[in-house]
Length: 98
Image (tube, rainbow, N blue to C red):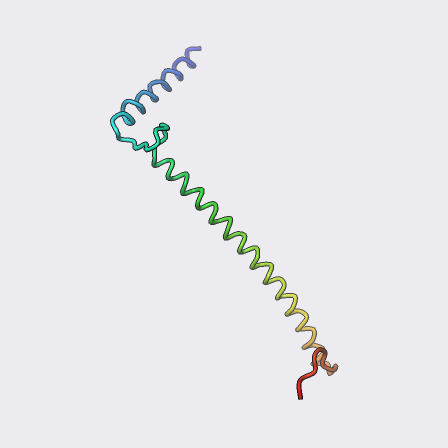
């Protein structure tokens, strides 16, 4: 029971130091009056913006990987055509213009 009272007393003392020592004297800026320092709010906003940017970039990388996979499949098909041509098989596809 004594430890709970000591911890509670320390919390009350810390809150009093925060409020009277920093907040009331203007050492902590608080534009909107919610007792959360502006520096903390700005940092949280920066983290949110960074998370949005990471999500946007991840989406673009996913799209790019999909395009690369499709092109790799096309290259594999073309390699088969080159192997067939090396073996002497006739050309497939559209005939060249005369």
